[in-house]
Image (cartoon, rainbow, N blue to C red; front, side, top):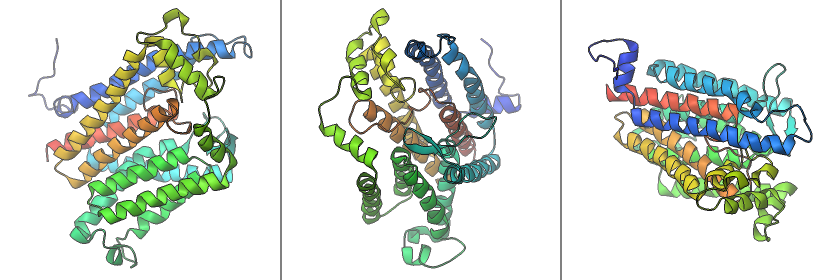
Length: 388
């Protein structure tokens, strides 16, 4: 088997010997599983929609996703070769562009499933700016937190010095645009994504040394936003209180749970037909597709795979020599882990359905590309951190 010669100082050779091969391999494995799921869930989607579109083929769904897989893997591989300066420029570009696009969802709203979170640009696929903003959000947040730590040290969270006074470096310059982002997500409404961003930011602050009293304040603010959403928005209130009612077997979540039960331990095989009646099975309820087609063992294997990814990220965060890299990797673990929990909890009816994909594995072009970009950045930062 051919292996690069370590004496050869080419870009690829340096990348090969310094990349975190375990994390890189886990990401490729998740993308491979996503391709299998695109075939399974695409077949179910074909059966569900064939009465409306007679010209659709069972493999059309998978074919439609191939460009995103190619772009995602190419992004993962290419970005992981970059240096820290290039990663920062890319992160700033992503954050600024997506912030502008997020403002566009307010100026030119596209309503879908009671939410304005999508943006339609003529000639381009429908995009979700909050999805595409995740890489820039994590990297720039980590950079800002580490910069504040380097300037203020132990006084980083002394708000009299770092917030209430207008200075060149102040939490004010971060919290104002962050509040705008959260406000737009609240307006959409998209409480799942809002909770994801808030939880990620809070975990990064904890890694950065946030005092316990401020943790309670941040969590309280998040819960307050949730209560406000329940009080002000009818469909949010209905979804929340529906958790306390008996499950309607013909509802979306009822079909998802029946599909999981129908799969049993080893999968239903040719008898896996319940997900064919489940809307959004290919994205929001992909765990139901896995469980019915391949069984509870396979579904538990997916959950273990997600845990392995989070554990690997946390290990790299602890081992990082640079505070910025440590914060960025921890933020990625938080973003990935919290989004996975929201998707799984929604599928299992442990929380209201949030319309959030399972990272890498669910259908969703913008989500797949965004996470490939984020993990490419993190792999590049980890690789460079080893040789500092």
